Length: 285
Image 1 (cartoon, rainbow, N blue to C red):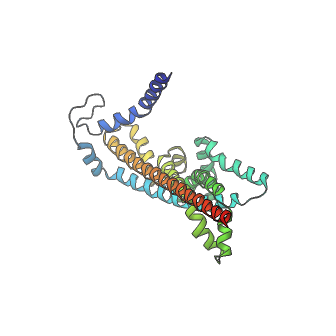
Image 2: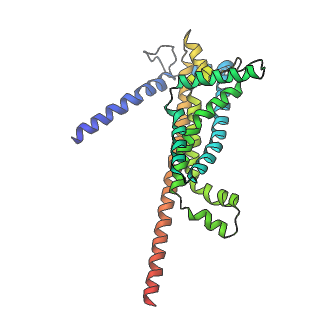
């Protein structure tokens, strides 16, 4: 049984990562072929650096992803703090349901509904163009918010509620207690939520396609437009760079969370030792 589980795990890993491995290998292929590896070369990486339209799409994508991640992280953290302080269960249940809708709703439904809303509002105010960078940013914030909330809210629920109260008893204002006590405690959740928001925004195609205006093209839309003709291996090179950047970010996040977990365990252990010493002193007296 143990051997079967190992074989199953190995097959699952091969199924998941074989396409990525092929993409990485053939990004260093000197020829255009995706079936014959001629020789190792950085030719397609050099071609990528010469493609101004693709680099402009990358710049637009990064600008959109960073902006959406930062804004959704701020808004999502504020929303999670508000939800954590709710005492009426039916309100919390309603907000949880509303938070899950953008994740459960199909992307094509979200994209079309947002596009119709933007066009309606644009015509209502007499705008020349209803769709632009701003509409894409609002759309990305909309579907990134739930991921931030779902990362930050559990951290708030795990935190000792007496910590901010103790800080305010010692003279902190509510804002100082939040920034100096609560934020450091929930920082792993905030960072994880921001990285997830960045990744989701970077990856999105369907919603971006429906809410994009003329003159602003993200990388997924650029690749989709290229498929109408041909996708050159320089896209493999770009995908390889993006893959390793995301991989490094995830590794840093996991290492940070492991470090925070070890530090928390060390603090708890020190607190238990100190409590035992105090108890022992009390028994002696």
